[in-house]
Amino acid sequence: MTEAEQWTVGPGAVRARAASTVPLSGALVAAFVALAGLWSVVTPIYEAPDEKGHIEYAAHLATQRTLPVQTTTPRTYAHHPPLYYALAAVAGAVADWQDERDMPEWVGPGPGAGNRIARARHHTAETFPWRGRVAAIHAARFVSVLMGAAAVAFTIAAGRLAFPTQPTIGLLAGALLACTPQFSFMSGAVSNDSTAAAAGAAVLWALLRARQQPAQLRRWLLLGVLCGTALLAKATTLSLVVLAGGAWFFLRTRFPSPRRWAAAGAMLAAVVLLTAGWWFVRNATLYGDFLGWAAYRAAWPHMIRSELPDLAELGALASLQWRSYWGDFGWLTLPSGNWLTLGAGGLLAAAAWGWRRRWMERKNRGGNFALVLICALAIGMHAVYLFGQNLFQTAVMAQGRHLFPAAGAAMILVAGGLLAGAHGRAERRARAFGIAATAVAANLACALLIVAPAYRGPALPKMALLSVPRRIDAGVADLLQLRGFALRSRSDGTTAVIRVRMYWQAQRDIPFDYAIFVDALDASDMLLARNYIVPGQRENFGPAAWKSGDVVADEWVLNLPATSVNKVRRLRIGAYDWRDGSLLGPIRGSGAAGQPTARPFTSWRVAGPQLNYIVIDR
Figure 1 (cartoon, rainbow, N blue to C red):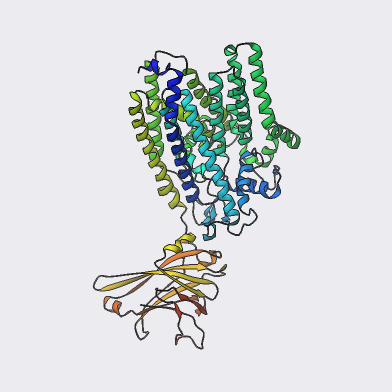
Figure 2 (cartoon, rainbow, N blue to C red; figure 1 turned 180 degrees about the horizontal axis):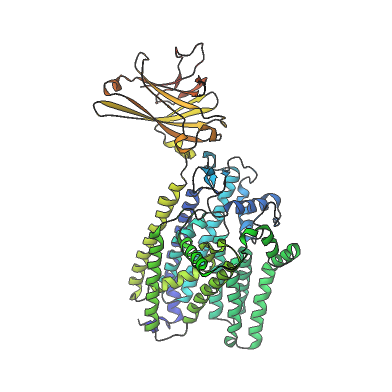
């Protein structure tokens, strides 16, 4: 089939080819839900841009049942339209937004979190299984996942409209959007960015449908509903709403009569106003202008430029936007590395070369070319919008996630270029599968090899106790509880090393960094080796930083002559205050069935009947 034939194939064949990709589309959307769900689990609470403010907005809606009002003290995120937060509040109703006992400690920028990347101290309590506000937050994150899935689905549908005889292009466009690491990252966070992406892709899809058959007023009605919804999702969708209005204006020659054209425009405007007009009226009533710009400037003055950026700064902003569209996770504190941006650059270069080939070879520029042009205009208008924002606001608007409303359109053009020159459906699908598989691998690498390790702190998840090699239950002075241990030994013929890894859990907040000692004893309780450390101190997370329920594992190393290692018959474990050497006690608890026991042991070194040691027999 020639290129010209591919643009002029009959509607029956188009519908048949589109129907053949429906199962693949569903599988792709489901795969994205799993992928973004993974990101939502590996990214701790507060570690996505502005997530703290977004959480507080949703919590305000859920608990106060009113929209927040922009104030200067404290500053809020009330300038954002409410659609996402309303959905998050409803989803989070399955839990208790007011129960904040398991929440991480917000620290903010700087070394206070014990991690140059993290913005909070994270504790065991916030890990799965969740409860209270933590559970509500994960429900809100799942709303973000679903909104990201909607963006992928609308991108696939819009791609089918732009390339009706090559539905594989729509599938590849959806796969590229789904596998963009930053998009998956933000779709797994409490954020309105994936909702903005879904709204932008939905407006694009509805606009392409209206362009196909402009005389059908119901298509303009649907477009109006989606434009109004987009305005309630995030202000950055404004560019696409303006594009929809412009498309209606320039399509007047395609209507059967001026009256029909005017009716479509009136319907579009009326539905947008009915859907989103109340939000702008509220802004005007509260703040004195429809956008609430004055209140935003007063609350966030450091976000407003005092002078226009020069060319060097504009270049730096463009570089930031490019990098952070693909990676640069966290609060732009966790770079993904040059491999990702170089790979993305190569992908776009290949797509550009493919479009050069399409442009040179295509004999017919009508038909679907107009729909492809609308995709290009969506990208261009959104870029212009963000450029204007960068002239008046600081680098916050140069973050790549603000490109998401036009990301669907961009991925359609990229996919169209990458599959240019492929002959036949089988070759297109094979090429698309190879590209998508590579994108999935890059996405998983970012999630599992970059983001997850960066936020892996000393406080272990609750589920870690399920994999403890030897479980016991011994409490020390109602402060610490030894939940399990693991033993390893090694000998080189001269010296031997016994490594004891212990899993401690805080029974309540601990006032001081108590130390833990481990003694190796022989059959007559003679001391063979000893070591003592403050657990967690190597990672700047001593017991005084633990919260109730925290599980921390640390390793005690006992060095002794190789001839003595076989004499070790028991380990004696205790906690003490290193300031005066006093032991903590008493010890309470017992070992699990079939495991070495943890029992109190009265040492001759301690006067009286107090039981201060945990003894583990070999």
